[in-house]
Length: 378
Image (cartoon, rainbow, N blue to C red; front, top):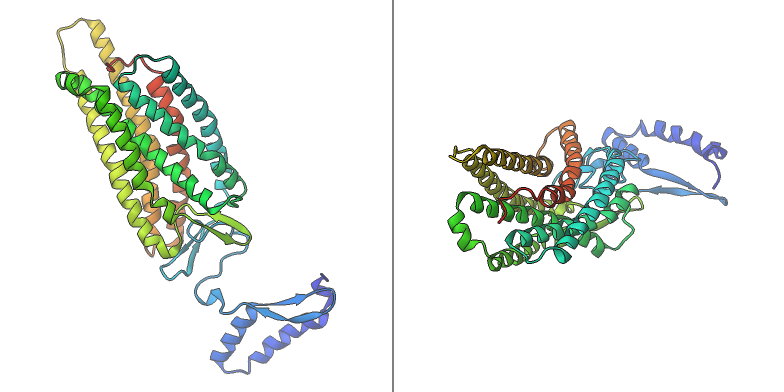
């Protein structure tokens, strides 16, 4: 292709055309200038061809996206209104370093620790008790979660260029969220189990059987898998400037339905378990702090138990609460008319809190399998 400056007559003709338009009535002049701004002269080795115009112009619907920042999907980097027009553009270069590095670290630690935990339960622990069933399923869900990360590491390191099929994109996103919420529910089961063992030991003897635990584990896998199945419908891929985008949300046309689905997921799969876990551990601390007539060694044991409870609560809150709060704000503020600066701040916070939620997958083995001295387990 010849350089543009080898056609001086073409380049010099453009100002003349623009000047000539000034004599045209104002409405028609503005339209012609808009059309000219979307025309590119196609030049090849043989000749100068006619202008190629893109009409109608996307700029007639809203501000034109800035070149170089369109490597993200319409719903992940560009905030649009309900009519599909561009309103805000986010520069998300930071996430192409943050997410691959953090997901890579989480994968390495989570894969090793959860595989080790599964090995211990399968080959070293006999017979299984109720707590072993819950911990085994927790390790399994955490392992499935980290197995969804390598493809995302590759995807974000390539700056949002998905090299696999659309069904694979759906499966990875589905596995990501299904395993995440299964882990939360198995943490819920462990907290209820410990609560009964500490606060209601008589009832615990009646309900603390492996038969009930197996039924609870199967129910969790079935219910959470079914509850997250709409992800397979909402998630899709699209082509933008040569990059195949694996959407984390949905297309603009389905965004209202997706936000409704995400809200129901937030309430049922996070808020309810969070409140129950908080209540269980709070009542456990209250019970353990009650004075007893036993000797000081028992007091020291209770203090260790209380410290462990507080540590578990802190990890749960730090890992999951910021992620769910910022994600909810991220979704709902895109449906409002807030300024782009506020939207960009929420967008950045949402991306930053993703690794926190992922970190729970390698914190669980440390807290629940490595600290087996927490002997409220029976």
